[in-house]
Length: 256
Image 1 (cartoon, helix red, strand yellow):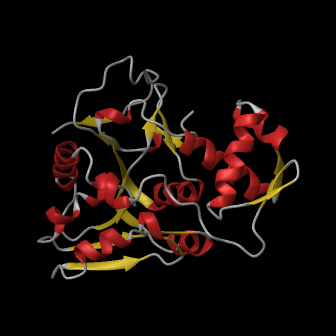
Image 2 (image 1 turned 180 degrees about the horizontal axis):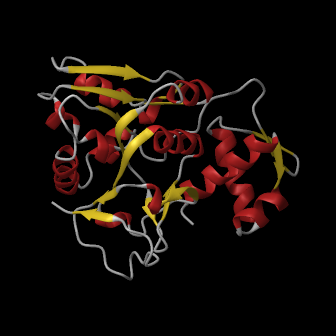
């Protein structure tokens, strides 16, 4: 398990229960207690939890969402060609005048320059998407409010989830941190998972955007099975070793 995944798991457990012991976290994450103690020291220094004897607890009065290990700008700059190919294919799935939802992922954000000349309504919790499309003449933007995660420029929390339940969209485009061979779509950020699930609930069609490195990629939080999606948009053919779905699951894989 990657360090950032372990840290996210610790924060999820502590915030869910209000506190957790070193022993509980060690058993849950299947790592040594010494590793957990080092992680708790780091997370406390970062201001994300409070270290107490034998474990950790939430900060008093704190509702600050967890940061990503890498900020949005750094992730957006990686694998630009794969993102471009996937974005081009995804944009071709959108009809003129449709209402679409764009997730907070960097591959999804790569769609924005290709959408600027279109006539659409865009629903999003991503400030990067808002900035990219704010002055596009034919696009109306519905911004989902909520608690800001500054280093990933996204809105999360109960306000975001509540606002999302009030809308319906023709097509939603989601990113992921990884996809297991059994088709489970994963994420590494606890506060983003309910928003992703909400996008699936309100969309008539939903597409997962994932480059070849996302098979298996990373992530420890289950978002949904691939069967919840209309299609998978990726940059390379996926082998049966990377993805093996049941025979009764019909998933359209869309390539550039």
